[in-house]
Image 1 (spheres, rainbow, N blue to C red):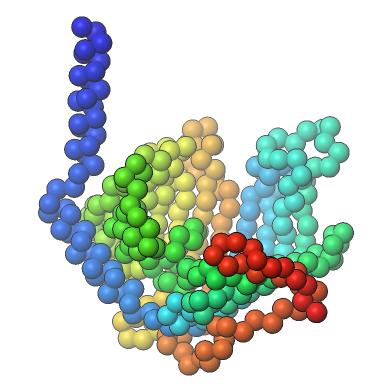
Image 2: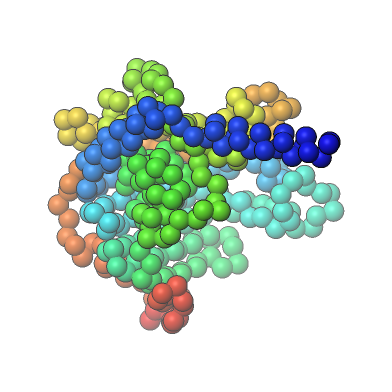
Amino acid sequence: MRVTRQIVCFLCLTLLTSVSWSAPPETEAKLQELIQALQKNEGLYPSLKVELTRSHTDEQTWLSIPGRERIERVAKISLVTQGKQFREQIQEEGEYAVITVGLGRPSAKQSNPNRVKTGTEIWIEVSNGKVCRILNESLFPAEIEPRILNGQITDRVPPLPNLARPHMFLSTGSTGDPLSVSLRGDDAARADQGNSSDKNREQPLIRVLDTVEFQGHPCIRVRRETSHVRREYWLAEDRNLIPVRILSFSDRGTEFLPSSEAVVEDWWELQPGVWYPRRATIKRFKTSRFRREEKPVLAWRMDFAVQSAELNPKVETSLFSQLDFPPGTSVSVWEDGKQVRTYEQE
């Protein structure tokens, strides 16, 4: 009898869970209407040219670097897009963590502790939608190898960088999915990438919550959640439905304190009624300390300042296919996901 009751309770719980994840028809209709409007607004940015600065501040307690509370670096980013073609150049200068003994509390017996190195990382990625060329140059004068050059040529078509898609500006991951696709669910995202659906994979619950105001902007608040993470998008109705705020809640934290918060603080009006973020901040918090501190404790933050932004610039198509590798660059060539050749640029 006891076993029977347990089974009945389990089935009831399962039924209630499945029901709670099914959106009412009117809620689903509202979501679909929003997605259609979002797709239309995403189409306002077929080509962009952007120059910006990204400042990265990393609080260092969790890295256990002796005598350092934080490390900082600044990147200058140049980005040009045309359809699925793009050219992105990043030159980041400052401090980088060198992890030699793992994370956590430092030990007095460690002879080679975690440390900081200072220098420059240069990343150039060029894609014409068929072939992608990448150059990564590391310049650290005080290191054993002061200069490292790596190149890659691949037929993998990379997604547009998030900065090329205003609706993804506040997103830290690079999924390749437009926001309108992400809000349709994982099956839609897989279909958009040419993959079949995965019925065994947990499907997110996505719904329109309400309308709120944030920084003077009327926003539609949308929630996308799974059993592990909940994310809220605050879509600014007067800014082409670009998220003006994104809150993420991790299962490692609490229900009320976000694991990350991203906010647009200022805007460019590229053309009448067409907007692009001008200043923004993304903050990540230490979820493991939520319950002890009962308040967000910063892990790292990134601050973006856009110096210029142009819609539909005139550019040469060669910009998306030409990338010269400096002499001494170690280049790998990839086809169909396999490395077919390596050589050193003369």
